[in-house]
Image 1 (spheres, rainbow, N blue to C red):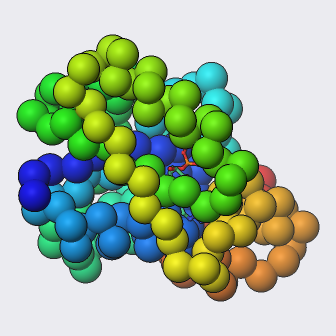
Image 2: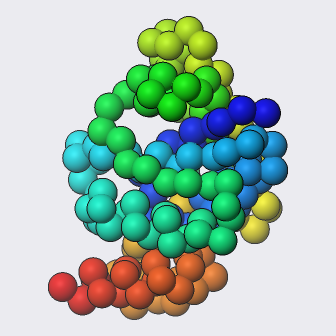
Image 3: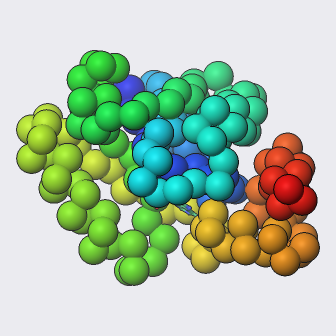
Length: 159
Ligand code: ADP
């Protein structure tokens, strides 16, 4: 199986994101996590910070890499000579948005195919927004993100 791109905001990376990346790495020769440099989403962490946390989180899996990208994912595929996009599907609520995005990407790049993977059941209700809210209220997020990410979160919240 060829290269697959795994795009996302990763603000910040959680165990749910990692679960999907690792599952994808068992199917594809190489998985490249693409950290979106999209200021419209007003992420908490800069693209540099998000990329560095993703790199740290996947450093033990040699077939998973991470890059940042500021354009369309359909164009990013071409740059990497890839045609596959990985996305995680948690609940039905993800479906409509993901369905639209998969078709949009295919409209822009006819070779783009989106592959959806389901995380471990324990991560089905996990998302970055929830993690940020818990951290902001001083709660424990150690079950949701790697220790290095937790540290960055608390540092950010103190400011
Ligand atoms: P985006 O802003 O592009 O949706 P995210 O960082 O929120 O970026 O998510 C990137 C991808 O990771 C999406 O496909 C999303 O569904 C998936 N994802 C995020 N959290 C989880 C999780 N807990 N389990 C499975 N997939 C997840």
